[in-house]
Length: 413
Ligand code: DSN
Image (cartoon, rainbow, N blue to C red; front, side):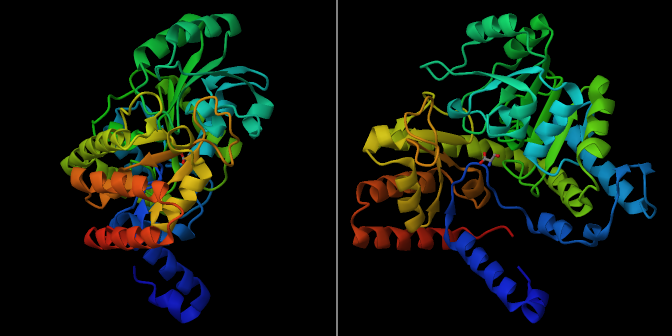
């Protein structure tokens, strides 16, 4: 990345950018929610659109000078509509958590009930965890998965019938199975609830047609744009026409101020990339890589939660499998240049800062071009690092091997 101007004016920041670039280049990114953008997305992010205030929506702004911001936001919206077949799209949410909060504030009154997935069962903080602002405003009831890794839809319906939630929320940040969208939305309809899907983790797999599209089923969907979708950091809301006005008003002026137009320009570029046939091949390869990772880790004796993976990640009970905590596994893998995150497993007896599990995802390494052969090698390294965690010599050797492989698969940006 060219940072010649930062170098001239700010040696400290330049130095940090270069160090981070080296870390990314020589390391293996296996955090399931991370990815690498293209050079084109990075250019749009660094473009002069960053200078512009554009409160409002295309054609209805509060400030002048909006000819080109209107055009770029319209492009982003139209491309997102083509990608997902959505009736209405708002590309202004700054990220996933604000997007969820915007939907809640658009469609709920304080105290209203929401049925969302439990965090330790793969849900997300913003789906009702008590530490969040949304949980202080709305009443969240959480559903869980069964021992076989699936959602118990019968129990979900019983809870929904009993609690009569205003909103039923599907979606996850660590769940690895498919949601039965029709069944979920049928339950929501029967109890008179609005159906919502937070598809942040799998948006790119849906865009790339590797997973079925939930958009036709749900009333409202939220996503981030920087995970499997390979766009800039940001959020987006998709909904049926009948909710469009409420959602837009809740976003601006209800929740946010000026949209980040450089980010919206970068979203437009990313969506164009995701519309290309090559993106379908990419999404398909992610699923293949995740499956190989699951099978190889199982061979090495790791317990895979939810039975298996149907998407881009695996949740592994490292404590139950190898007697190492999630935090210890994260630290040891960091030492060999493999970045993952510790993660709760369903009803984890351990705490969130040192849970029993780790979450491992393949979108970023798939972007770098790694395939089945490399994934097998990575599973072997993960096992070797965890089993030999006390042996500094082996850890150093593994780190060297990781760097060698990374050098063969350069970053796209
Ligand atoms: N932090 C993101 C993740 O890792 O899944 C979601 O917010």
